[in-house]
Amino acid sequence: MKKGEMIIWDWNGTLLNDIDICIESINRILDKRGRKRITKESYLEFFRFPVIDFYTDLGFDFEKEDFDALSDEYMNHYISIESHSSLQVGALDLLNHFRSQCIQQVVLSVMEQETLARSVQNHRIQHYFSEIVGTGNFYGHGKIALARQFMERSSVLPRQITLLGDTLHDLEVAETLGCKCILIACGHQPYEKLIKTGARVEKNLSALFDLITYS
Image (cartoon, rainbow, N blue to C red):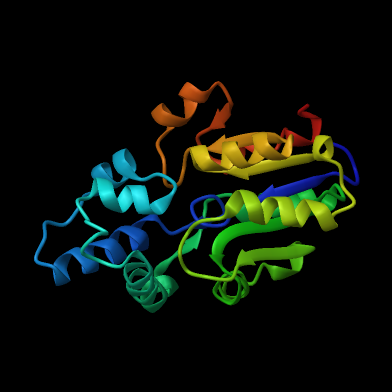
């Protein structure tokens, strides 16, 4: 990468280590319904986008239950325990590294905009980003459309952008935009699943300090 190029960061699972509070939030929903809790291993095996398909895999029947109401319930739990989350190991050093190289940085997430902005601010890193881009709802969909809207107002070309994410969906977003993508297997999907895509996959953020010369 060169001066003037851009990093688009995914938030949940990439910069923010929130997998444990995501699992706990889901388990509180399952507890309320008298259903068996999921383990971290099961979560990593089943989690995927769109999120409604993940819930279906867990046995939820959306002919009997409203998905939007379930999403709101999940976010209420998530927000109540979000303070237990932390930045991924190496995140702050990498943010500083990219800033020192004059690489523009943006956060793009399907998290609701105000919730996302507050989460970034709570970790005191908002000053690293030229934009913090979230959605207008809590329902975990629309990331491709959100990315396209961002690109329409951005002066940076797709070939000048590298998207950093932790899921197969992040790769789909990057491919739709026509930008580069590196997946980091420290979040919501395991290395074994990500590496099958043929994309560059790293096991932690510390492996990305060479990105300035990556093409």
